[in-house]
Length: 424
Figure 1: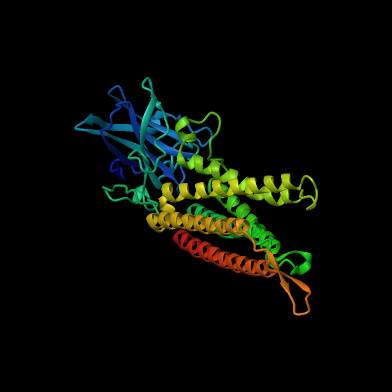
Figure 2: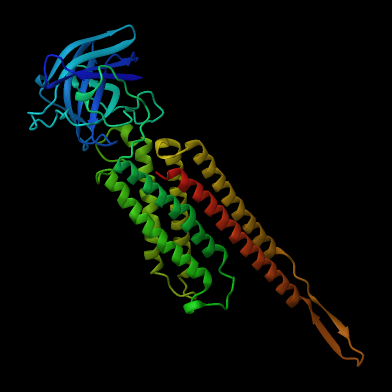
């Protein structure tokens, strides 16, 4: 747990007194810092840092560069240390910081006459001999070393003499809303539109074989229409999240710290992007479809199915990561997770039931026929297979339609609940 206190300086009208404190942590070579952000992202933002290295305390102004994720020290004269300490289980420092009203050419120094979201973070120092070179803080939202964020923007020049931060952070900032709309579109696309589209292609091919509006079977109309709308949702959703992240790739990349590359946010970005690529590629792969009787048609069928299935599984994993790890975007993270688990179990249950019914129908022995003699002595062969087959086909048709209705109901209800959980 870390704390920041701040108040306008009584001696200098263009300065603010800032105090940073954090509970004792095992490694002495640590830092505690306050970042000044216009939104909920710490990209290219100014940061004031207190570094504790080998029982020495230094104060630095830095610029938190987005690429690569390292902090570059600035002129230390812009900060004036007042006091510091490392005792009684606390790391503490107090310093005077210029408001930058008349130093706008100094990018490392924030203009404290404007309001900011304050990020309070702590983490390790790379090298005790260079205390200004700090490493990235924890990216695990469940960690005590994950940054705390003020619930609203704060103008330090108008601050009360004492104030602390909180872990709650639900401001209606536009980037926060963009991420939520990104989630809304992804949930609709994958859990509703594409799920039903996949179901129709897998299980509805034999329904209404003679009904062909515009020369195409009904299942294909359902499959193509839902997939087209879903792909539009995927593209728009991806654009929204890139705008929210300042057109910056947040997934794994060369030269970044291992902790950042293996963070849940990074994994979510990578898994989600692979799912989107697979989903968007499917309509283009469909353009290569050959005729039904072509010898290479089975190859197309398997490629199309495997890519679609892998993309759907990856998307489901990405949504699970979002529900479990990015809790601040959900109205009720616990119920959202329960809803997603129940959705998956019900979908698996419906699919298993249909597959079992299909296998049972295919392996069921069909009755033969028997010979009857008429009064005139003529032989009449009574074929029972035809009537029995018609009855079985009707049963399969009814079961398929019922399963489709159940699948749509499950997908619609649980997608609707998750949609509600993501509403601003």
